[in-house]
Image (cartoon, rainbow, N blue to C red; front, side, top):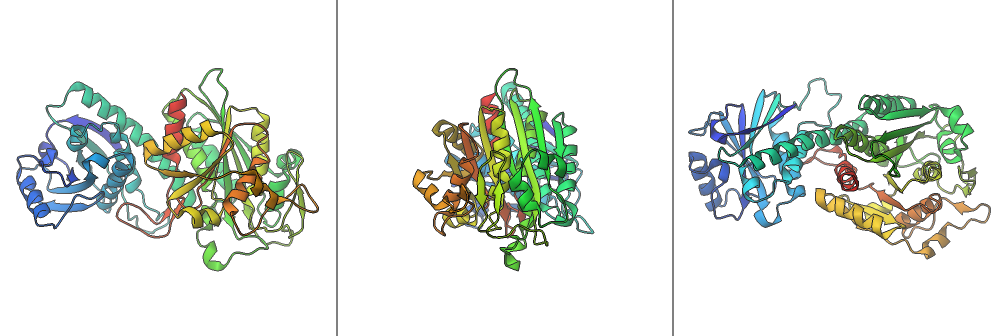
Length: 495
């Protein structure tokens, strides 16, 4: 989708649709439709309480008098004083979904309301949402039900200053790249599991990363065994498809130490011999979302040419129930030499991450961040839209939280007290892979902490936000691509 920023009145832009934002409970006219028939209609509908202007609310006006476009979409932006990146992304996603149902050569979106509110930095978030909204989860539908626009015209007012025009152009360029990265992560998550066995998924990663200038190395089973990745091999033993391990490097930060990004890449999780109920397996093609987010964020960083050094580590496998599957009571030896008694084969993510974290720590990075759809316990604690943030370093956790606030994605700091480690003591090995039923997200994080040496580390449990069970005006059912935007914002702050 081509994205352009132009300076003229929205009503004069010749496109298939025009779209104008307006704020909730705002006494003034909507800037993009000021002194037009559409403004009179909008004001009347607001006065009659037919529309409010809440975030993502959409109202279509056809054949609006005085507009070159045959149809106009009024887009709610929510309260002016609360308008931020989350609201902009939500409004953009709703707009994109609404207008992408059929092919359109061009769509013009007015930016006057955003610019008048002094929120030029939210142009990127708006575009990210529009780009995300034009891609649905129906990757294998016989007839596509979502169509990216041929051209997205972002319209700044005809009397806008040059500075506003350039700020909008910068935001639009960034938003297009980040939005496409979000969609990349979503495509990976939504791809059927039969099409992304570990080797196939590793090849998808290799193609996406390498074509954007990222160095990629893919390890097969023999190399993994030689590297002593006992956790990854143990989880993979029950599958006919061998595991893979991917190492990626984007080095554009000179002599600065690298950030290590580690992603869980379970391409399908049956639970192993601790078999999940059938309903709990329906979305387990997305258990590789952590790995997908790492890839997508690194691709975005490379396309944005961020002056940072980032290394990615992806542990990729299936968790199946074959005759060689690991059994309860088995003991695995991890990359760093620690032994783990397996008491639940459905707690497999921490086993493969243990090897990946150990390997990442050996390279002495500045920091390590892992992302994983790790525990149902985190969903119980925080719901489906907030990720749990665990860390051994307060400064690192604070910077990640600040990045999430800038994008509107939500994290919540969780405890890491040492007494949780007591639950992981084993009678036969150094650790067991599960604790009691209480505080399961915390005990999982305490398990991971055993494999990061002394490196500052943070863990995002994204089990809740990674997947949407139902469709809404601004969100698709399926993979969400969560935290790609936060990782990009964090990397930008480090550059």
